[in-house]
Length: 292
Image (tube, rainbow, N blue to C red):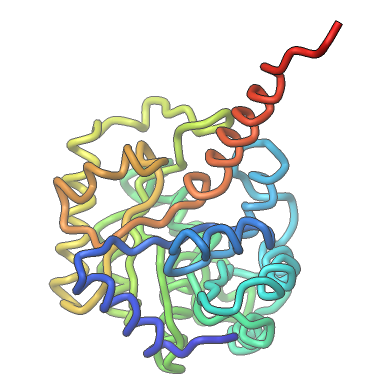
């Protein structure tokens, strides 16, 4: 069942009014989607990178184009979940479908109720790039070659603006103050502050020299991004994702030190719980002694 933008926003704002944290749960198959919905997830977010999580390896892109992978994942989930909206990770920079309208329609026809800009050029550009954003300029330079008015990050912004004009629910990942402002101006309903790949569990990201802010610095920077977005659109809903926040315990501090409205859990909602639960159950079975 597809949900309208207003239906989704009404539910999210009702949760916020009741003082309840919003949860967007990354889901990669029917069982996880069904379990997340039963657990109360407000949004079920389908990412192509979930495939690698389910393979037992780090969350990375499978070689190839993201959108067909995401579209192939959804059928088994809508088969078992009817009462929670599915949000599709849609790659704006899809060289196989240059018509954004056509790309969006493919997702809507599959039963997605909203979209998030994923994979996003902004993640690598901000977290691993230089202060001159050389990689962003490089990505943008391909627009003319593709026959498009924009490419790279700006195309993601243009896609969110188009979705807003169509009155379709949108979430966005943003990794800097300026990117959060871009997306707020484009009309994003939810801005998710992305603070880096998720740590924790058996294949979590091991931060290197890029982990320079520390916990308090990360929370402070996140608040700065949320403040910037709300200055443009006071109604925007703000969530956090990734980095040192990867389970219910580690996310508690988010609500103590920021005014975030909730959290988006990908590895935190499926990979790490599966690792913990299956390992624990199997260890428990192995505790039994047989007759000899």
